[in-house]
Length: 164
Image 1 (cartoon, one colour):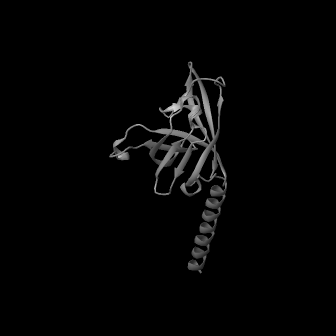
Image 2 (image 1 turned 90 degrees about the vertical axis):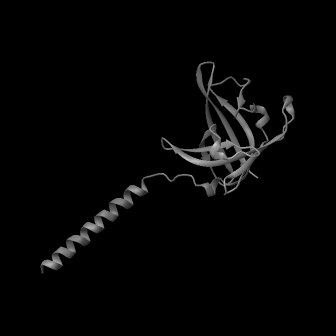
Image 3 (image 1 turned 135 degrees about the vertical axis):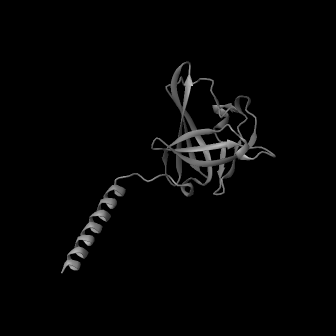
């Protein structure tokens, strides 16, 4: 009888442990996966929050924000991707930049991060990189939000990307 009582107590304890874990897991938001981000994307729009609309802003230490409109981002699952600037408006130069990309969780936010790599460079030897928050993601659209300082104020650049 003692063994039966002990077995029942263990069974009840196991049941409560499983139900508590299930409830807490159901209340959490799921992180964005690398599989949902991989693919080819085109930047279709760039807008500002907290920054005047026609500001001169250089992004990713490369070019004016306008040069990135229409840029194509190739994000394969092996993390060795690239982006290509194709706009020739306002003095933009066409260029393809190899990158190594990954996802990162920062204070509960999903971040897209990348490092520029070039010929003969390995990502582990590159110390500078870039991070943008993935503020929304669907099968066809992704939105990045990058915090920036502009004239001693904090603003944001919002990039809208469409899967191609």
